[in-house]
Length: 82
Length: 82
Length: 146
Length: 146
Image 1: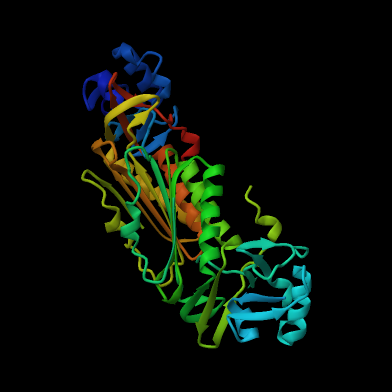
Image 2 (image 1 turned 135 degrees about the vertical axis):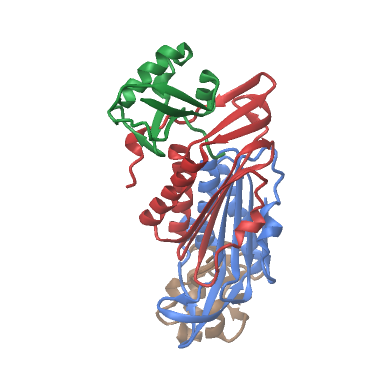
């Protein structure tokens, strides 16, 4: 399946796009997504752990299952406020 | 000596004046002032302890000595702010 | 550092931008507004009385203590006295700091401290008459600048 | 309850009087202003980026958590994104309550919580180039509404 992944802050700079498409097997998990992205974009190396993943605008854990209709996003460490 | 004593909030209502004159012996203390006022104004009865006394705009203890040139004030429990 | 006792309405918008903003970072404000109810009684209005000279002195002591305790760059306290209607502002405090923790703490400290040492009294007028609010008998051992 | 992400300057005076004041009592505000120095470096300007839909959702979660934790009657969060100059306001929070303790705590909680769960990112531009500020890796175990 093809999954759309939004990329924010420096994740955008790493992938070069604010939304990428990632080919994944059905019922893939967040941990699978990390693996695929780390291989595809070596610049994630050493920084992937600091990224949180959201599905449909909620933060999710490594075991969460992704479906092709989900809104998936990469959330680097945040720094809102002052 | 004659000492001027400012009366605020309900101390003003008890004495009927925002400034009273109190006859005291030289080197009288704050505790003496309380005694004189309690006798002069029976309505202070049971409430005198809740009043703080200031001399020259600083809170003082019972042993502080009052001189006739001092600015003395009776400060009932305060309630500034909201 | 600004401390003021005023007898006309407090216009927050006048004070909110008082500090030069370039190096501030964090501003914390506190606004105390006359409530329509107090101690289960409907309030019609309030009267704030003060011992003005001493109150200004004690407000200055308050901001100086706050500045010593917390890293604030600036602090403002404005307290209104006289007759206040429900919904009107009685007190406004503004603390400025490079960091939010100090701004919050200094602002909170200031309103708490005002209630301990600044000679201002509130008389509440309601349906059942008027009553002096006695929040806090002054504890002189708590007065010493720490 | 108002949560907004805006891309134009935040006018505090517009927001400061937003809540009906008759029953309020206490208002606590927090204003976050872009500083001219950060981490020892001179700042020329900042860029705030956001994942807007999720950020608004997480701001709503923040105010709802604050309302559950503290007895606040109302709460406002406005966060600006885009390019901000030194001295401009990045965030404004206003908490209203009958009592000051709740107002202070809800306001403080909100700014702290924003920094934990609201997807907004800050890029600092200074003399030595631009850098993403990484205050807080999101800890998903801390996200659950408590």
